[in-house]
Image (tube, rainbow, N blue to C red; front, side):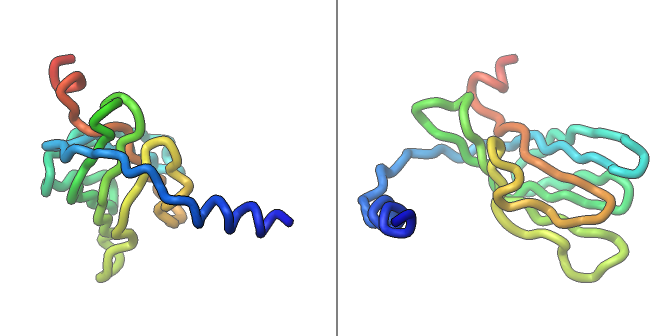
Length: 121
């Protein structure tokens, strides 16, 4: 029965939400071993580092009708101990576990995008 309800919800047309591209955003990095925490304020295309991680903010988007709500960002994250990126994809600020970095030492999550209201703060 649950599957039928889920299938019905997924079959309904989705209300498209207008989003805007932000010039940058804030990404938080936690070193789970030391407890160190840093907020990286990055522009689009810019990278920031903490320990072995380098986090690049590829894109940051936010809902036009409610800029303070749910930001989402495309990140590329490299660990200096590995050749390939350890993460490349979208993260949602309100649901960091939805698409999370799976790393034994670090946690990374999107805090917000730079919106017109956030830039003025």
